[in-house]
Image 1: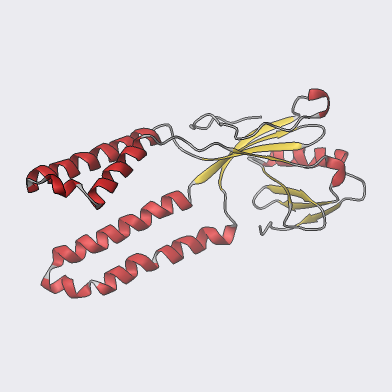
Image 2 (image 1 turned 135 degrees about the vertical axis):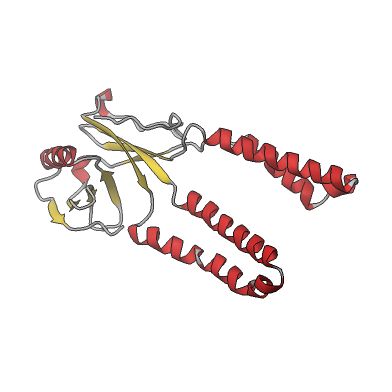
Length: 233
């Protein structure tokens, strides 16, 4: 079962592990989720909000004397915060393949198809603005130092490509002895004694959730313990 997501094709950074008999996957699905611990999703915006707040408080003196400077400083701080929020809270695409012997998942940060065009546009605008300022100042010395580094950075942005996805592979099913079932967020994690280490599966819907859980009951050892609780990791 698969879903269509507007994305770049995954680029594997490593070769998948060999499977016994080159078996075909029993289940296949794809989901798009933020790849962070749940509490960090709320903690990151809270921490980043301190930056524009501090800038705004520090620049309050400009509000009456020079309002344009205040709005400019606060606007830059706010734009920087949204920039970091975008990259830190960007979702990832998880593409699962479940085999009779083990499970695999490709994890790649999500980028829409127009992302490269946006980066190219921003880089071109930045280069034009810097060259325009150099022409306005009337000195090529303006292009030296930090400005030269900014132009080089803009050129590097134009060469941007999506990073390769990471391949995660579970152990063979027989080596697991515990399962955490999170029905609220549709997450099933198979692991051993250490609950923080295991193969985490994020399911797109309730029907597939139940099918995958039923499959695990047939391949995991009989001594496996099943715990129903919210997955904290």
